[in-house]
Image 1 (cartoon, rainbow, N blue to C red):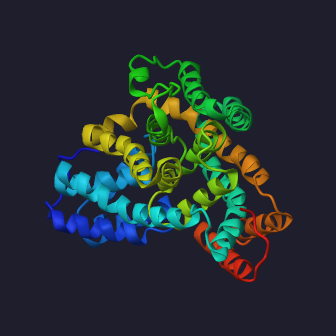
Image 2: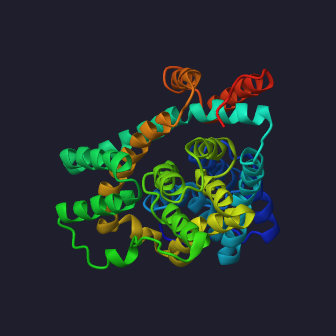
Length: 387
């Protein structure tokens, strides 16, 4: 990808704010929807980007840690309006979903929420474990095909198992397993790691400094260790938010995951709910700002070198190890998410969600909205619901 081959029209800042904000408002359905909307805007309708350059940008963003579709939105804004456009477009893409998810967090995490709200949370959150399995299963085929091409099928299976077991048994140490699998694959492919360690976040345990420091560290991990797609943040956050710091109950965390799936914008917005539970509105804004900061940094500092990133063997080798481990963690997260359910009928909802997602191939948003509608009915009918 070389920028000399294609020079886009310099777009007005107001246009960037309007168009990227529109995508932020209607971008339900996760990365596939975001990529399709950005392609239609930038390549098909306005012809601001060359089709090949857009596809190269998609591939390069998938090599970065963090929410790939958010990074793609920031990249496209950078290409049409420079660094100021990247900041404006990225913010416009993120803010609509952030405002909505924080408003819903206030409602769902209130001390005495209305019965219908409890119903929505109890029923929609019961479907989350099925969503986790679908998210992991959807990412597995492409990762497996890369392993077949590179002849590392046994290692791929080992990384997948390591991620699943780490999520179930190691909790807060999951990020070390993700990094470790990536580094093992670098060694296995005999690629010299020189310089790679400096490009990767080094996990350390937050010690002292109060809630905001701990929350900042959790958000840093969310933004910098999301290998394999946005859903990998779920096991990363659950261990900290529920088990280590006790900012949320398991049921409240399930609600947060459901909210992150049904609101527009990236799934990483879920971290704002965790931040709100930890430190109120300021915590939600802080967590979101910190979690998205790496995405902006990657584009502002390195977008002009995306062609080199795609050809970097060290980066590819690292993701060949960290990627399947992340998929394993996503699949493994379904177990504790399911075990967090407290009512027998919630397992029936889980089974129904699995039927909608797999045999019937319905979307995640539709599945969770259907569950939420059932929850409203149960709540208004006075059905006993978990708190």
